[in-house]
Amino acid sequence: MLWVKIFHIFFVIAWFSGIFYLPRIFVNLSIVFFERGVTCENRVMEYERLLLMAKKLYRFSFPLMFLSVGLGIWLWLGYNIGLSSGINWMNLKIFFVLLIIIYQFYCGIILRNFENYKCNKGHVWYRVFNEIPVFLLLSIIILVILKPI
Image (tube, rainbow, N blue to C red):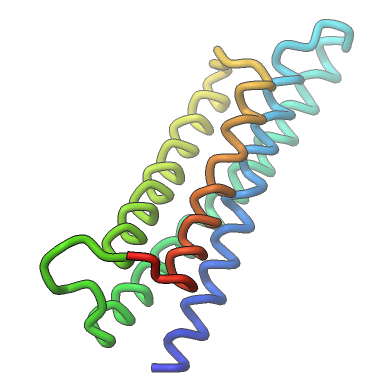
């Protein structure tokens, strides 16, 4: 089970590299989308380059999500943690993981909107959106280490 735990942690770190950076690309896409001082040709080229980066990063991080969750389920069932009745730290952790999965899928929706040249939010919104997984990950780490419930 230690090898499963090692690979779970590894794939979570790899998954979060995408989750942390993809919304940062959205910030830059939003800036380019609404920017007025750049010539149209240059703006389109920069937008397309950022869009390509975002698509590649999303395709990279998506399978890592499945590996992370799959190994997490293996550990959850293998150690039999949180399967009893009542709320405990593992149930709360699973809730936060589900929120991160929803966040990942929502990033895919945002990416499709950028692909279709639909951007209705400014760069400040994406900067705030970028911080959500930081707090979810911190919450998960606190739950796993301290097991407060």
